[in-house]
Length: 251
Image 1 (spheres, rainbow, N blue to C red):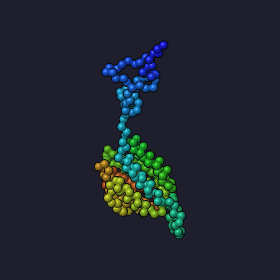
Image 2 (cartoon, rainbow, N blue to C red):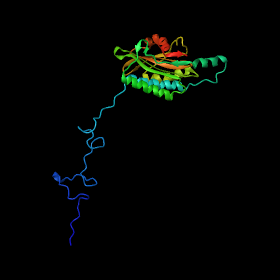
Image 3 (cartoon, rainbow, N blue to C red):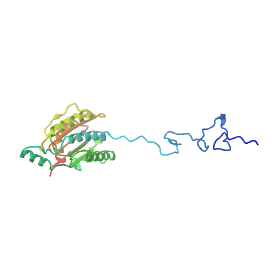
Image 4 (spheres, rainbow, N blue to C red):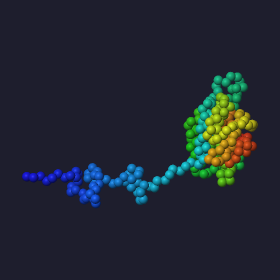
């Protein structure tokens, strides 16, 4: 007895209808035509009515980028530090003890400027502070914040930490040499560090067309820097001692 011919369409009987022009859609296991793949790896991705629309990632502000660059320098400043246990002499020991009482605080206003509440800036600041807590060895306190109003071209950023340092001047020079290339500073000049002592330097930078005055300090118990946007370092230098006194405290 003759047998019916075997199906030329495995897994599917009766055979699917013919497409115009003789084209047969590719078969999936089970015999169902395969839906066309869309960008994104699943049917309908990126098409109207399918899935969530794709939006480009939000870019961080220039302030945020600069804050993270400065953060990297602060970490460099602290990595070379540490408690100077090998100092000899009573005066050196007293100096270390005094330095251990140093701390930095984050005021609600800085130089008369209110702390920024911009969500994107606050997010970057918190990210930077979290990073400092985990990567800066020996830090007893940290500070990071943006103050003022960019619409009025009056904005100030501060970042710093308290930690014992063996050679504050060397750490300051090392950190600023790295910062200079990132923010376009050609030269840092030595300035009066003020009543709190230590070493301090200022320089002029520029990023994304925005002028910046930069001043940094480093002493036995702390280090940090200010960046004044839309202004020169000469403008910042006039305020430096006052600003530092608002941030650096002695217990």
